[in-house]
Length: 447
Image (cartoon, rainbow, N blue to C red; front, top):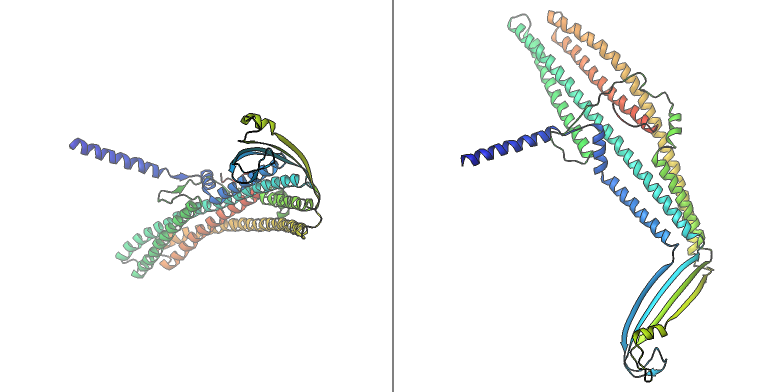
């Protein structure tokens, strides 16, 4: 029993250890986070299935070029007065029969509708492919934004903890000076209040980081655990980070690259084929048909009773026919179909214009946001350097008793708030610039 108990305990410890190691290694860099999100996204999977459906439609339309072929058989009995299918005479006998047949039909000319249907299906597939690419881009940009938000909130937590550590240090020193009678109790109470405020800021920063991780894991569509975390990219801002291109120049590049524009163009082309398909209904259609037929009956012909094979061979007949259909009046159905096709063409052209306008507006907004973020980051750098020096001097003066706790807290809050503002400006700047790189067709990474 002792051996079994020890074995169970060691097994449990090993299991817990392995589980803890698995949880501890639940780290995601940006590339893996994007990959997981793309694999799990249901909208992307739905778009891929829609593309497969469009490919099946193309296969069906291509099949219209080939002849159809069907074959079959029927068998039965008849009683009472009926025509013998071999002698063509009325008889009162029971007649058993077997009929064999095969049919084939092919369209020789159909007003170009077969080719136009194929071309329209190919345009639909092209549009579907670009739509999938656009969906992938949207997912990637969203994951990058959420990933950066996690890194940003982690840095915010570090700042809050540093501020709390500084306040606690000053609180300990002030308490000793108050006990020695060098400082009034009010100074200690002021710093205690600031310390409580800083503890609350650490709690809020911790919650914000947890929410940022939760948002990222949900966008990746994976279960959220406390061990979920990201690997912080090593990214440094340099003077050449901001693109020197104007928003107009970026748009000229993006309009030829962005899949949503290419998809809208493919939809316009598909609508043009739709108009041609509708026009094809006004043209005559010509088709070729072929038929093979034979039968067997269980009757005696005079003194002879031919076998099944003999009857099938003797009764074999073939036919070949051309069919010409000339539309004269279709109750205005063809005219209505053409009108709808032309409306759809105009709608697709409007959709293309809207897509281009939206792209231009998005680029203009992203460019202006990047410029503003660059200016905010540069101003925040100067502000942090100035307030850091002011805080250092205030700390020295407070230690010497030259200023009171209120002035010290003001200098401290100004410095740490400036650090938080700089951090926000930094990651906002990084993301805005990466969006511009995306529109220029450059690979998106944070390293």
